[in-house]
Length: 473
Image 1 (cartoon, rainbow, N blue to C red):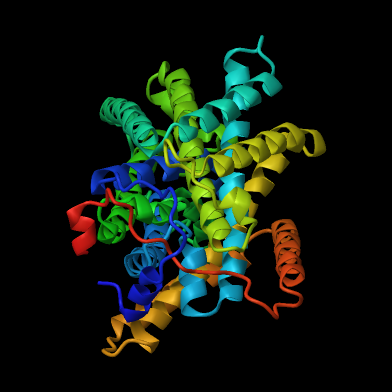
Image 2: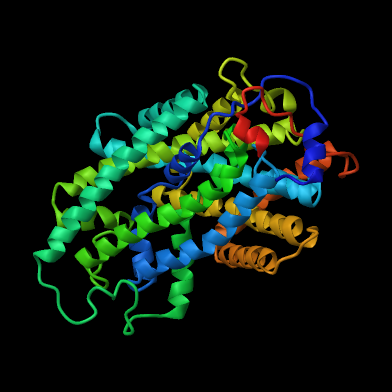
């Protein structure tokens, strides 16, 4: 139940106008979270994590899930207190001050804008491999237009596409698990502990390697926070908490099965022909046709993730535009007919396309892709720190009734995010720091040294089509 401060903010009343449509159920929110996080997320980093962790990928996936669950709970609880499309930006701004909220929002912009860019690059490169007669730039334009067109159609269209993609990807994952089980059953395996080595092998285990590999494996769960950006479009904002936690648990369970099966098929020591494309080689060993099938599935997964990431980016920009942190006349506008922030959808699509065309020209493709991934984590982890700090402030420091769990959980979540952030590569921290400096300089210029109000966090009243459930909540 929102507290008196939230009620006062919601009741203050902004100018009337088109608002986001409350149309998403718990199932829609969960599917959105799974797609934007991706059911095949560990496959792209499987080789890297396996090498770094000396084969303990299954254990690393579990450790990373536990680390992200702490932040997932903080996200869900803050979405219940402040059901805003601005997500972490709004939470930190409300609990601390508008400047802190603006800084977190600026880091989120980096995270969300780079997500669809990465998806466009990956899909375009892989599609060019499948159909070499069509050049990479043409594929990049195709995928950027596809993502933008689907998101501009409205939230229900995006939800239906998410459901279809989740079903298709799920079928391929089930087939992979089936052929992997058949392969293991029909091939000899030696020695005791064969089935437990993916979790722990005393001959190769290293605590230092485990920590280093976890900082990479946490990429598997990046995107669960996007569920909170749909709080104003949920039929009941209270469903954001279970949807966020379920997303982490669901992705963790799927990822664990995938990497465990892969390690049983390939082993924990044998080197890969190419660590960047390790998982398709594993699938091909289990059943030769799976090499192509899995490659195509990863393209489909990246399409779903790119669509969902662009959707989240548009809503973060909308939250910042509506609050005055960005020009409201462009970023804070809702398209009346479909009630989506169409300007932001097109803006993110254009930026992602530009980056997808430019990045391969200024860096080797592998280096550019890896750097973009690290920059995504740079922005996301700053936001995660902010959300954990906001949860501590709201539910413990300012709460009338204090419980130890309301202190321990967000503090642990904050410290884990700090550790992961510090483990990012130096180039990504330098570039990310430059991005943050530009944003802070813009905010200082706009407010003449932060002497005037930077952000207005007032939220519009619920739309008339809000469900009775949502109103009661």
